Length: 322
Image (cartoon, rainbow, N blue to C red; front, side, top):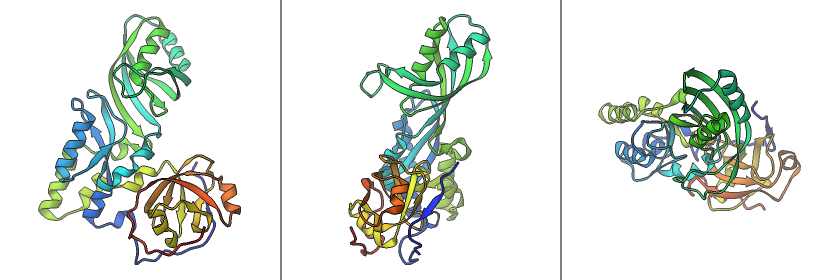
């Protein structure tokens, strides 16, 4: 259920400054976009990002949540200016479909029971080849469901906290079953707000860009590339006045007088997206107050800035209230 939006100050936005994300001119749209890419099996995530840069003739791109070379599925690729939002996607929940092979026999009942056992908080130690320190961590499995089974091959879906290793999960399921098990293949089906509904292949992206270059038709390219604002759909939001935007772009923390409206369920120490009244992403920060407190505040700091996204100069200076 989406939180309500609470209005603190009924403000209008000046059409002379900024622009709604979907209406950005195509070159600006590309450089402030994200591709919800369907990673093929074989190449590394870094190689795939390199190909995206080549296709779109860009100098910079980055991805969120590395997939192993053999794994397929959702790999959000941020283009140029959008790479600044990758930090917001790191804690986003993930969903996978995994094919696991058991090393011995187990009944359907025992298998179902074991999968249910792994729902909730689990302890995991990252695998040897992982990029993080190999210390024991608590990770949450929101749901795990058996989809199909053929003898020793088990297809299941898992909705989990960021940083959960599905390969290790398969190994641990095998240990609890008493049969042993390993992961045969993996497909990621969700990263935060990114799902398979609007996923794009490398070939589709290349065709859309070449069609744009040859015929000047932007429609297909705009379908393949999403505005960077799409990448913060999973975050609570605070919308700020036009007069507050410039100060935030220059690194000022967000104070109460600059707020126009906000989501009703903001908690302390929660990552929050700071938006313009045209729904442009201005910055990402950590909340210092709850929504209830923000409603009552007339002054004082509300958000501790972590990353400025919008470049200075889009909106004029005009806010000096603390």
